[in-house]
Amino acid sequence: STIVADYRARTPASAALFDRARTLFPSGITHDTRNLDPYPLYVQRAQGSRKWCVDGHEYVDYFGGHGALLLGHGHPAMVEAVQRQAALGTHLGASHELEVRWAELVTQLVPCAEKVRFTSSGTEASHMVLRLARAFTGKLKIVRFMGHFHGWHDQVVAGAVSHYDGGVPVGVLPSIVDLSIVMPTDDVAPTVQLLEERDDIAAVILEPSGASWGQVPLPPGFIQALREVTARRGVLLIFDEVITGFRWSSGGAQGALGITPDLCILAKIVAGGLPGGAVAGRRDIMDLLDFAATRASKREKVGHQGTYNANPLSAAAAVAALQIVASSDACARASATTARLRDAMRQVLVEEGVPWGVYGDASSFHIFANPNGVPVDPATFDPHKLGFRGLKGARDNALVGKIRMALMTEGVDVMPSPGGLVSAVHDGADIDRTAEGLRRALRALKA
Ligand code: PLP
Image 1: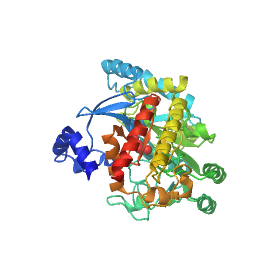
Image 2: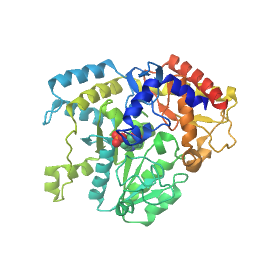
Image 3: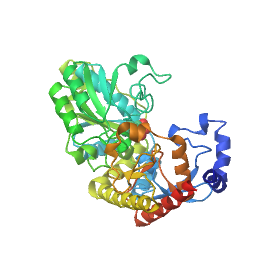
Image 4: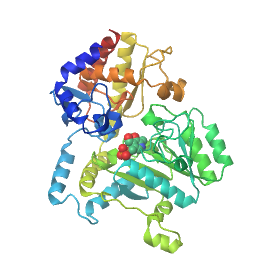
């Protein structure tokens, strides 16, 4: 198609790098999400809301470091903090002051966070939080939700990134998959009933935004109903705030919703754009990780290791980022910009007569590209009417690839939902460029 031909014509240096990469990496990539046919874009540098590919073209960036960069690329406070720490030591093999300051900021900002442990990624935090929930309750089963992503370890992938109709993803231990129960989200009633009936459930974990940071929003009252039944039944409620933490509000989705989980996991923004994650929550649960507390309670301590836990470089970036989140309107600014961006994109769909939808919460947006051609009026599009199957189950990878390439040709890089996570430094010029880019991309897709 001309979209692929235009992409190829603009990006010969990316093509050349991919020729080397594909002999080295399976599919030529290091993260499944970066897969793009015929080849991914290679990015050389980034600043603020923009990034530049190896062929020198400029893009409005909506990847935002997979959501880690609420303050945009290369924020001076972060650059300074990381440079200073790199000179002092990248790994001290010891406790250090910045980890204390980092945890003070997390407990100050996040409502459920009475105590914290740092990890190296969201996946590790997810692994740890489930271990902690099982240890605390003495129960084995975990309730999860269709399409909700909690990282790539064995306990959470079935029904989250694949196998929506059941079954065990290849290479994953079937005995582990059997320990989680994947529930639908179109209605909370079946989950409430399950929690009423069973006594073997340790925890319920969910993305409080709905699957994939809100690509499949939850019905009103869903989380409140879970909070009520889990509290009554002695089941732990865990929010996966890896994306929503410090983004939905400075206190995450729990701050925005006014609903406090027992535990939460954090990553991305929590580490200021460097690798890192955290488990945070109720003191009595977190104290299962504590030597003295478990000696006193005569309970077995939960183990936790990790070479890069609270590493000084991540801690330096994290403290710089969270101090800004705590003392400025960064979250609110990013959300306000994104509301204007969603309106501008919606307006383009209306003007171009394209039956798609644009939606999202806080500083996120999703484009519903209507793979099955259901009747949609972009001016009144309501994702709640489509449910999981209509919004996520219907994903058309070839169509999404074309949309992404058409937008890249117009200088806009969106995530493959397709959608994006917006920073506090995106501005009116980014919105205008994105809206015009979308208009030209839609015309190219029609041609
Ligand atoms: N949970 C959610 C909601 C995520 O979006 C992600 C990553 O995108 C993870 C967990 C896993 O985090 P990480 O990629 O740091 O392992």
